[in-house]
Image (cartoon, rainbow, N blue to C red):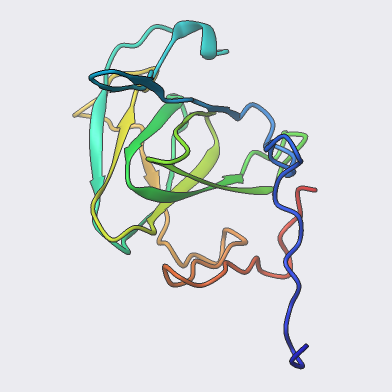
Length: 185
């Protein structure tokens, strides 16, 4: 082997389950496509997938350009319920809640066309997205609270913030966690 080469670690189990410990309160549900004679059906949201039990009061779609990073954002009242419906997206979550059992933990998942997922992001969990694909990525959000135009429940940090122990890298590079990040294995 060439000096300095790193061996890949295990990413999933033999039955394709993620190895990383999920951040407390985060739900990641992989969704399967249903091939039909006329196309493909993919469910995006079902109330029985959602542990919040809160109604869908608002939905919107976000578009992320190739290579773009949309990070970091967080809410103090609203829970995001995300579904990436087009593209290849890296979704990174950081538990910024001091009273959480997983405070300081980072989760990273890849989702999109090939591996659709429904992801519940609790209040106080910072999240960011990077489009790893060659085309636009589309994401639908079913937040628990409708957007308040006069008083938005939306907090932001720059993508390269030192407050979050994660380093974004180029679209083809392997991400590196900063040394002070808590591992989730």
